[in-house]
Structure formats: C-alpha cells, structure tokens
Length: 311
Image (cartoon, rainbow, N blue to C red; front, side, top):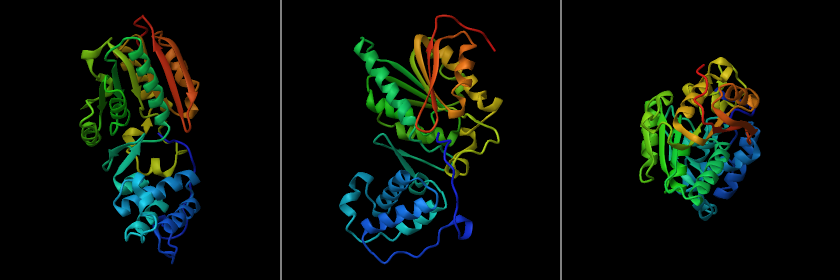
C-alpha cells in the first residue's frame, strides 16, 4: 500500500482544477498539458506522467501499450473530464476501472483496494524464491496470498510461475469476487474468507506466504488522498498501533508454512523495527528482517522447526 506522500487540492468546487481546455488538439499535446496539471495538483511527476497516459489510453479505447499510435490523433471527448477527476485526487485506476500491475491487467470495483507499485518489489522477491525452489527440484511450490485484495500477488505469481500451486484469500466479498474474476485462466485458487482461518488443509505444507495486510494505525493520516479517501477502510486500518493484523498474519503464516518456508509481509515504513521485534518474540522464526521498499517496508521471515509461543 502506498502510505506515503502529501498532497494539496487547488481551487474549484470539491477540489477540482478548472482551467480551460488547451487549444492544441493532438492527444500528444493534451497528455503533456495534463501532466503539468496533475503535477500542479500535487501529484509527483513520474506518477502524473503514468496517470496521464493511462487516462489517455482509456479515453482513446486502447491499451496503454498501444497509446503511442494514437498520439497524433484528436483528443478524445472524455479525456479532459478524466483529467479533472484525477486533479481532484481520484486515483486514475478508479477512473478507468482497472489497474496495470507488472504487465497484467486487474479489473477493479468500488471498495476494492488498488494495487500499489511497492508491492511489485515483494512479488519480484517471491518470483526469485519460487524459481529457486524449481531449480532445486521442487516441482510444484505451494504459495498462499493472505489478504489478497483484487488478487494482485496471487494472480501475478500464477501468471509468472505456472508450475506453482497458488492460493489466495480475501475477506471483503466484493474484492474476493473481483479477485476470482482476475484469476480466471491462471490456475490460482481464490476464496472469500478470513485470512486468520485460511486453508487449514495446507497447514505445514506451504513453501511461500505473501501478504499485504492492513497496517495503518487507526487515525493516522499520513497517507495520500488516493489511499485515505478511496481505498476501502478494511484494507487500511489496524489496531494495536497498526500491528493487530500483522500479529494475526504471523500466526497464520506460522501455521501454514513448512519448516524453512518463507513469509514476505508488506508493512509501513514506520514499522521497520516493530514488526521484526514482534516476530522475534514468538519463537517461531529462524530469521525475521525488514527492509525499506520504495514507499513502505517488507518483512522476510523464515519459519523455524518449533511451534513457538501462543500470544
């Protein structure tokens, strides 16, 4: 989850930027103008560039990878309305109804968490570990994605490592339905349910667990408007100073993983010390180390042989 970034809204009703539509009429010129407007609305340059292209592609009814072939055409009728909404800090992915993550399209719906770029770092790590298992002779590594959202990690891993048996679980019914839709044709199994009770039939057999649980302390408002105003609260807030659901995922992952199995857990950049300390105190993990990602943090924990201590 992108928990970083500060923003500001400028002028107009409900935060909308209400400057005139430029006279230049090619889509290429419109995209350049849109980038400048988005930056002026408080969006970082790189994100503004990506968002403007996503909105332009959606308005032109093409995939983002095919946009360059449309840039000398006239500006589609819907483009500036999309830009106005994005200037008000509505996420571009919500405007177009889908997100692109590591080359794969994920359909979204209202109340479904939008994939974030820092999660790609965790997926890259997971892919390396899965390929390593295949190289050592594990024919079908078992992977579980806890708090799967729209299926971001589970579906991407199933796409990239078709030999793996990939499972995902998501509590929110709408999100679980979207994840099942996104998983079609990949072999990933997505179910609706509580991650704390996930897949008891897999206890002690899983090679890799990945999870992006809620971890923002209740009431902490240091995240961007795109997160706080548009992502579902269930996917954001956690009690115990943001550690409540992380503590639950430690228990679930400890139950699911085989000895020496690995957990990759996304958490806040402000939890780089508290999360490893939580894991170290359970006695279940050989190692538990956190590192900073582009926006947040990731814990890598290796399961030990012992049952550990019950909190």
